Image (cartoon, rainbow, N blue to C red; front, side, top):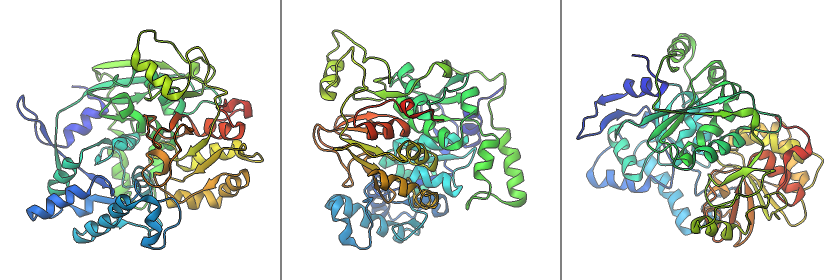
Length: 468
């Protein structure tokens, strides 16, 4: 029978098949862990005297609670608060006690978990990858089956290297045509979520397909897959191709020599068969898209930057969201005053994202009254950006250039916005209070974020010339 990409990866990892009464037992190739969702899992192992089954298949870093200012001692952690600082210290203890290599503050490979996995070559086509984080779907850009798990499940994987899972359905999202100039991957995924809704992918694994997807580089593909969870999907995947292989070749944990050749041959067979059937499908015309911004309090409340905020009479939750965001139906988001701009997160903190922002900021200034934070996704991204002089562009424009970390994406590490302040953010969630108590969040691309920083209001990046 013809199979989809998802079906091929799933069936290669089933240890015990699913029945009507029990979920399948699925083998996990790579377990990513960080300091926020792992402490309880390690405590469970200690209580039961259980060792980590495969430390060699466990990749640990610190990102969520870590400050994005330089850290040289425990005193420097005070900025994140006592609870977050304790998570960091506990992570170091747990990894030491259980024999897991940790990319800590002294590592030049440290960074956001969903940035360093691909960067190190640990993320590979055909793997099953889990992490106690919703945006693990990022790794699906490589043709991996990657999804977030809960804290209890983190403990299960640490102890057994397996996971109980019900088989999801499949959803093909076909993105035909080419993206217009000035429209990027973030705009694309926001448009997709706007089209299918925040529950449109519920119970499914999405496979992103079509000409526009094939035309994306790996950084952009990761942006698209990253936000699959915001459409309710279990995971998002893109079939591996030469773009994927070129990205992975020569990376630290990627195969080499004859093993590389064998891996590529194997990976080429992962793509969905021509006659494979999906449970559902959606088609998007990429050529009709514009830069996108959110206007409400979930990622599905999104509109083209030159379009008015829609109206939903008689919908109290919609009205509540607009009141929180201080916007009105019938009015465009352009012109809304901006207080903070954040470029970073596991969605948009890679080198190409920073280059997009730097292109607009070069020779310009962040508007008076606007604070702009630029936070690279890893220490390696930081190093590469500085080698290209991007840090000098950001600083000259008046932006803050930080150490790697999750930063303002979730406001639990000292980087927050004040009550009522509006942040244009390249992150993935715009829930109430996500970036600080009472703070308002507008999700956008790096180009739109940078344009808004310069204008001091939400601005169309196409005003600054065509951006790829």
